[in-house]
Amino acid sequence: MSNENIEKKLREARHFLDKMRKQEKRAFGDKEPFDFLLSAFLNATTSARNAYHQQQDRKRNDAIKAWKTGWENALSPAEKLLYNFMQKDRVAEVHKGGSSRDVKPDAIKVGVGDVYSDESGTLISMGSNIPGSGMGGGFIIKPHYYFTIDGVERDVTAACAEYLALLDRMVTQFKADNP
Figure 1: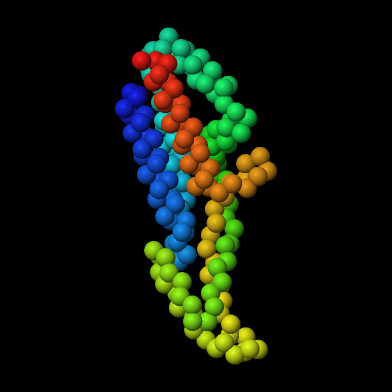
Figure 2: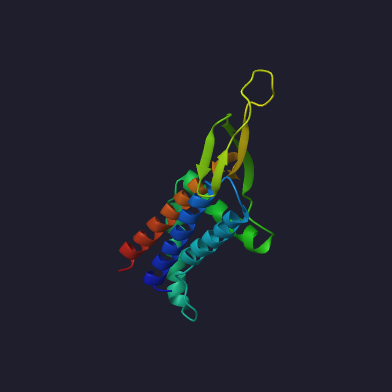
């Protein structure tokens, strides 16, 4: 795959990441699109990550493998952890029934007379503010998507953005080392 195609895959991944960021802000409606977008992101980044190999060119592939191993070995421990996690999560997404991403409820307090609105809809809370009436508003439950990476909960879109930055750096370094 050419550098242009690899860069296109990274733009594709960025597109899906932007859509995930918009989707995660939605309180109402179908939550499944977030998973579709995450799957597409993982597939696009894997295509970019593994793209330098060419069929029937063993000498070039061996040189690229050596370069990539050196680049991966130069990653910080935290970067290696994320880099390896995302590869494993893509395998889980495609071959083992789904990403390891999890979701927690994010409760947003909505008082009587309050209005909550986002791209997915609007809620107007009505009722009585009389003390003891039990009608003091309520909560909107929004999903918060996260990965658990080495025992630490990480926001999915933040981890994906960091991973995408690593891959951008890999491509930039490859181009510099292989003009």
